Length: 162
Image 1 (cartoon, rainbow, N blue to C red):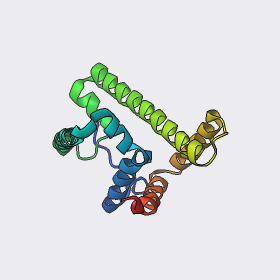
Image 2 (cartoon, rainbow, N blue to C red; image 1 turned 90 degrees about the vertical axis):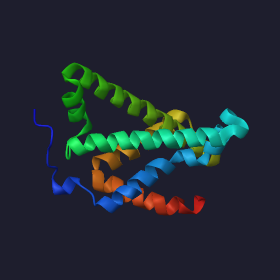
Image 3 (cartoon, helix red, strand yellow; image 1 turned 180 degrees about the horizontal axis):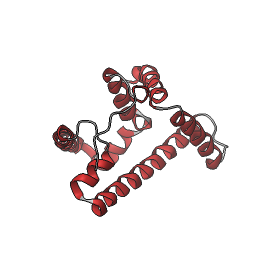
């Protein structure tokens, strides 16, 4: 099975733009309420959970980098199939897809809460959800470069929050 593929130049972005994509992914809607969630769950011991999360994140990134050295231009689904076989690899890929669908719904609900509480408290959830999903699909259908452009703009718009 051929796992390593060469992407078309129109479907790639410059390496420095990857930083903007990562930053906009991490900031997102969570920055508006994460303090409340951390304080409610951990109380005064929040520094311990932050330190543990940082260590686990570093370990995860290290494992990802070590794996990607063996597959320079493969996608995650191809790596799953090559490492774990057809059945277990497809199962891991399905779990990955389900995880991101769940996270997309959580993020969508977070954006709906922000819009409802700050701008339009009387609009039903399904209307706001439909509008946000339409905008998201319109952006995704534009390709990776449109998504990256949106990420760069969102980083510069939210930089004042720091």
